[in-house]
Image 1 (cartoon, rainbow, N blue to C red):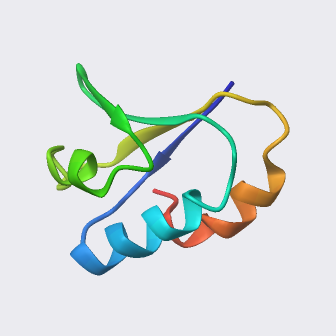
Image 2 (tube, rainbow, N blue to C red):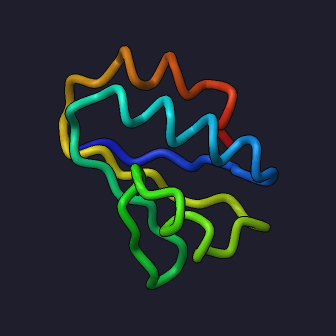
Length: 75
């Protein structure tokens, strides 16, 4: 499992992020404090506090291709 911090401050960023992660077969969650949502769910992401960086948890160790695609969102 890999955990990285990301920042999704604009609604357009959330849309682009969801479109990007949906291309990958890995299970992913976003964690903000004690709240956890599916990283592929646009509605779930909007239920989080996006004013602070949130943690992306990817449940695989071989996800370098995904990491390259989400570089613009790294906090």
